[in-house]
Length: 460
Image (cartoon, rainbow, N blue to C red):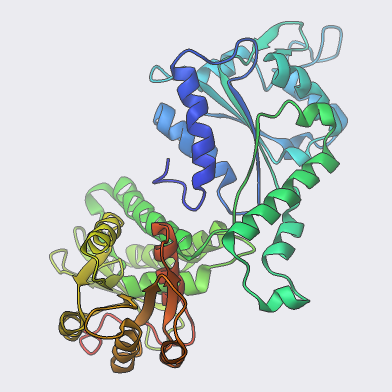
């Protein structure tokens, strides 16, 4: 699931123990295995989380029973969930949306756990929450014909956009001192969770909230998360081409510069991953479809994607499949005198697909920088032969397209701080989490003030 859901590690950590409890046979009796309410801004992966869990458990993202609560906004429409009782017109013709057969159909031989998703629960009529009280507490739902449906082997998910507007104001204040001061991720997470809990308590009754095992608040996506989503979308596009075209399939090569362009034009804090998917669809899938219908792409060929000269669009060129193009991941130089830390950074970044080069001193770093096309450099501020901040600033002067980050355990002195600001060098305090380092690299690479790397002989 970690490879499918990006930017939400806390959510996965909450779901895995629940599944393990079921697999061990220690799930509670006479109630669902778990009841989760997923909150957060739109496009952060709430529904995708349930689909990814279904794919992990059953091998198919569609192996879940999804109830779109937008279809039950009127009080009388809620009856469609359980069917009409005897004596009502259409009793025999009305099939309930929730029954034992449908629950069993979304389980599999691989796993007997069924997933039920009530999508956008806040849009349903109030009687929906009252109807679910017995389901969430005792794991039993009584249908209109008086038969019972057992939810003992299910995990119940509810998604909601409650508090989304307040969350957006917390993430991007429009007025006041906070609008000019960046907020720490930990502080943002705490504020969003508080906003979400308050919104839930205002909307639902205490007895309904008390039957929820965990309220999981999704955090806004960062630069590294958006970059991972672009990688997923490009991989999905390639699999889609192979599955649909068969023997007429072709390869699509999207280098790092083109992916950065998609990030610049598709990243939206307000709309999350959906805006990025629409950008990939508009600037990659649709132009490729036009080329296929015009007969411009032959079978087993390779379409090279690059940024146009005006940087307003992407350029697609058909080449041979055997052609080698640029890496889709950033190339990073790590200059660190501590070999253990250097090896750890090297291993973690390579696992993410990055092209990593390492050096222990300034002389070695300059030699690598002159021979390699680098997107970013992480430099220990306290190198043995000279100041790491001065080295980072010098490398940036030689190549303004390079992004530089200085790693330090302490506050910099006045001289080094002046060099850092003048040279446009970012700072990363040790100790740091690996995801924080990668997030900072992606954030620096997306800075709009400087030109991006282009995959051209001149840049190389």
